[in-house]
Length: 570
Image (cartoon, rainbow, N blue to C red; front, side, top):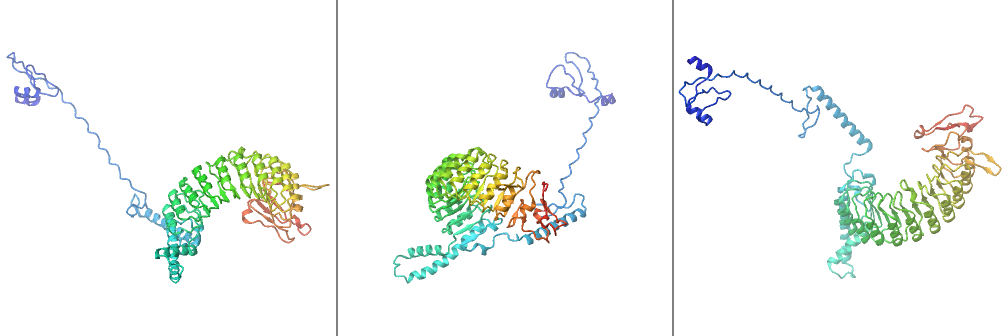
């Protein structure tokens, strides 16, 4: 009995069963419990419940393998400055990485020695002077450079002020207090030794702190060029404008941090401003530009290229307030149209330089704007209208009649211009020295003949893309095409003839008649009078475009030292 009891499980007493189940009466066996079954109402002997078969043990889950630690590549430098070795622990990878690093460092030192970029900052000696041209050091210029400029200016002013104070002691006319004498001395010293010109174009590392130093000590500044300093904001510009009230030239091109407040302060404090460059300032507000125009009536040179917010109304305000405008650049200012040009032409009769070239919205500049310019701006010498598709022969005819002093004309990609327009320009503008006719496919030998006969002072002529141009021929009334240029244009030194169709056959013999070196392609190739015993050899820059060969019969035909144009059949 004891052995059977040990095999089938222990007996549970009544009290233990009641405590365990919390029930009275008939007890039910649960799975895995070896309790007996009996009934209190009967006197039957208790019986042993059959124990279920034991369950097989659950298999244990296999232990997860620990992930190996991340090993950095061999030769990697850690945060503490140590160098990691290879993952396998071999020394060969570490040695290879070390040798490669040494090679890189030696190459950097060699580059610095050859290029001359061994300086980490601008030398202090270059920051001392009244006229500072530091454009070549813009790559390493920063706020510390401006601080050096300010400290050098302050030191010169203090030294000069002491000398002035000594002179004022013996001046009987000065009867004021010592403070007044000091002010007079500082003003005199600043006018004599203060920094007046500071040019740091392209210095992207300078910011408001450096501008504040300039404003505190260089208050006699007249010309400031910080183009490309995108870290300078309205705060720094305001510090300079409040102190430097004698500014005459200001270049803020590509200063993306200036939104308008600082420029408006310039308009209030710099009435003698004559030159303003705010090109590529696409974020600049209109009201700030109008504020400058209203406060600076002496403006003569204004650059508004790529200013997307400038409109015709802004040009109207500028023309009404600044009637001395001589140079205006509105290249790719896409909201400017004929209306703005008309207002400028009416109010600015002394206009000499104008650029209205377009790459977007070319339809806004038409013959109407050119008509107003021709009627009101007789002193115009430089005009660029490239990309303006709506400019036709009518506009060029008006220009030829009104702008007799025109020297530079760029009508590149004005596809509606023909020989008639070229004739009007050549007959009216005899002083023309530069003319660009690129991709004007309606111009032929006739137009080139008019240029050669009337524009005798022409020096640079671009005829790229003129597919109807030939070497010309001799007619009863004279020569045409390139032959006319070779005879009638003695001062021609540049003539671009690239991208001419294969049907064109310009004769080298005709082109060799130029009395001065003539460039026949772009990149330039100079074609002087060829000696009979030498071979024309192009430079390295033109070797991919042209090839020079020596003719076997150079003794009998020296002009046959031929230059072959790429893509042409000569």
